[in-house]
Amino acid sequence: MNKLNVRKSSKVRQVQPEIAEKINEIGKVFNESVVGATQELYLPLHKTIDRKGITVHRDVSYGPNERHLLDIHVPEHSSGSMASVIFFHGGGFVRGHKNVAGEMMYGNISNYFARNGVIGINATYRLAPEHKWPSGAQDVGRALKWVRESIVGYGGEPAKLIAMGQSVGATHVATYAFRSDIHGSNGPSCAGFILMSGVYGINKENITDNQRAYYSEDASKYDDMAVLGKIDRANHPVFISVAELDPIMFEQSGISLINELANNHQNVPRFKQLLGHNHISQVASINTKDETVGADLMDFINSYV
Image (tube, rainbow, N blue to C red; front, side, top):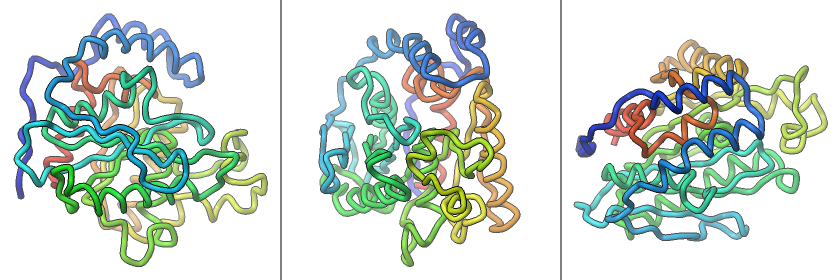
């Protein structure tokens, strides 16, 4: 098994104190104001990142829809047969994009992987209410198929592919990964999955407008659309994380997924509670001096590709 050379630096595995204080003040909540306030904390840091040595292929189409787009971040000096990580953003089923504030947000993730010798890919997918369940998971599968068939042209190895999602992106990745009615009889064909603060069940008593827009107005269908209780294939390595300052439903859902994978499928995922982070800072911090998240991601990737 070939190991990647993880870049050594002076980075530390803790949230920068001046940012940690402000994130703690925001508290254990998640809403649109949290998104904006947290992004504002990290945008100045990302503007100072040296992006030399990385070639970015922007808006590469992986399907027929206008949102079937990828950005592919490739290290310029590579040895070939590189691993790849494809990231699926959040956005509550009804919004979101592979890039926010130019490439400062979400592009930071693929840039980080490229700086560490891995091809980083950001994906955009179809949104509700125009596109209902399981369109998000289907787009995960479509994007992965494109990468497996095309990544050699960018210096990648098709077998060394990790799918990663955060928030709703994690929900879509998990739906694709663990349900054979979504990924098909040949399996998901990935080396592993990274799931950050997703929701894997559907709470009929506390359904949101965004969930209704994606799943259905008909609550009788929810059990059949969830990940929890519908897992029938789970033989791939899995990394599951939650943020310390996530609202409790994200933590509960992550633990429920771990329990189902372990108890029903004998697959015990790696688990990490990201101390000092909230729902947005866990991804916003990647590619800064804070290695709370990045170091564990690279360790997982190194273990399986």
